[in-house]
Length: 233
Image (tube, rainbow, N blue to C red; front, side, top):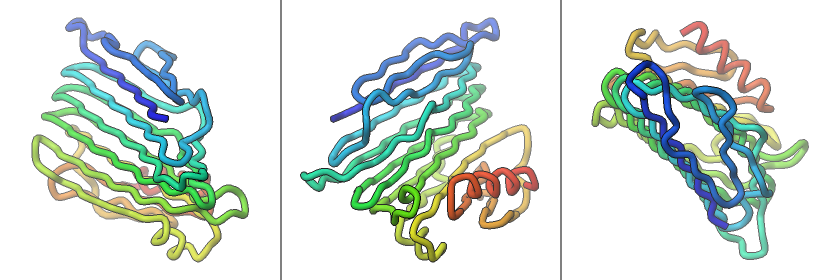
């Protein structure tokens, strides 16, 4: 199954934001839940096998958008042993503001998932994007996951990062684990120094923005450390 979600926000010119495009198909629906906010809602199990989830979020000049999720997505294996793809493309124009928190992706045993996130930030846009990966259900070793994050700011590459489930699980020495990745670009506040909190690390990037990476034995602890690290940044 191929699931596609497209959300576009534009400024009306009077300080308000108009959702000019809000489309979804497949296993994910998108619902407007507040004036400048939407939620992703899962309508079917997955991704399963070689399913594809493709999400596009565009914020125009002066527009404001908040994106959140209702529940976790659970990646499952299937008889065809295919690779599930989860793709997120984000474009924020100068003067735009986006806060996006992707719902957790749970990678169950024997699942095979590749995720790709591409962020394009222009001018003085504000961007706060968070991703949550959970490797395995309770007492279960997670399946294979490979995630790539690419960030361009003002047309310049500032981050190219790839992480894998094996590196996360080996560092935790546990059956399962969780990873929280957060990128923040706030032109009004210079990036702070490198900080840490528990198993979370906040690192200023050379081009622009700050990257927070947090590892935990479960999602709650990873989120807690990521929040503490960001607050001290």
